[in-house]
Image 1 (tube, rainbow, N blue to C red):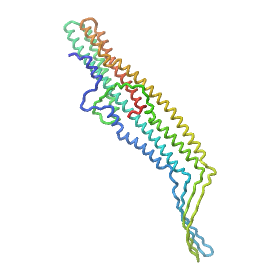
Image 2 (tube, rainbow, N blue to C red; image 1 turned 90 degrees about the vertical axis):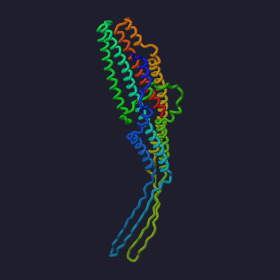
Image 3 (tube, helix red, strand yellow; image 1 turned 120 degrees about the vertical axis):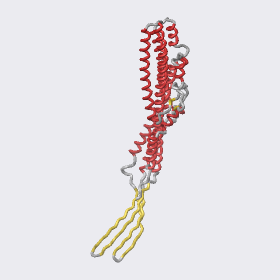
Image 4 (cartoon, one colour; image 1 turned 30 degrees about the vertical axis):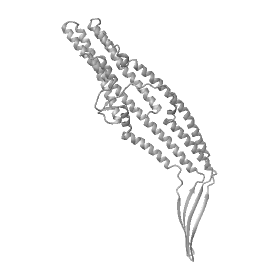
Length: 398
């Protein structure tokens, strides 16, 4: 029974049936749950949390003990001092430093979220690269089986004397060429599959999914872009720098040092002890925080400007990705199953060859053309999918 083009189109538009199949969503979920990926992301977030814990802390209290002894003219005296001192900031600088650190943590956590999105996008690319390679193997396998059937038919006609031995040799050479290309396609599939499963673990499942992405309308995605990690990071950094500038401006206010202690005196003829109190006031003469304030103000302005630039850039990238996606998708649909099912060059050529209207070379050219259409469709669908993955990355697709 002749293998028809509809079988090729069916294989092209749907995945291989299997008891266990792996979809893109499951691949991304498994990839993000990989122990190494979780360790990387959690470690970065732990570093950010540690930075917050160390910010805005008061100076540690100082405990001082001193002993003075004096031996003069046979009369020994001993004087002991015990101090506890604490440096106190009354201008609220430490609280502002903690607030600044909290916003900086938000900025750093947004960068971690961006890393997680990029990892997910990379897994999506690996998945669809393997899926496309699998589709190409299926297409070439169908055409290889079809040419084998034609070769068997031509051998029978050669024995019957209907066609020459040249036709048999030429079709057999073409079968060998198609078979070699199929081996190369299978090797590419195995390599891309190995790259995918090395990232997500496993490897026994078959791949299931649609290679051609859905169409995307040109509606506004401004609300989605506002929550993009890159913009959230810049906004948080700008707020952190503004708070740091406010904290630096308060460093012109003096800090206080409070101390309490006890003194004990022992000398011939007199022993005693008493309490000690002290108040120290810093004189902000040389360091008034002016340099830190100007630097923080400049960082805040730079981050706000970077936010505006990044927002415009992301909006432009998003529009470009939509244009590119729809263009590539339309280009793929020109060669897709729906477009090519109506007329197959191979079907027409086989009927013409059986009727003696064309030679074997024309028959082979028709098969090559149909095979090229199907492999080009896979390539164009993969290009469209890559544009869609970029769209997902910019828009913030979960």
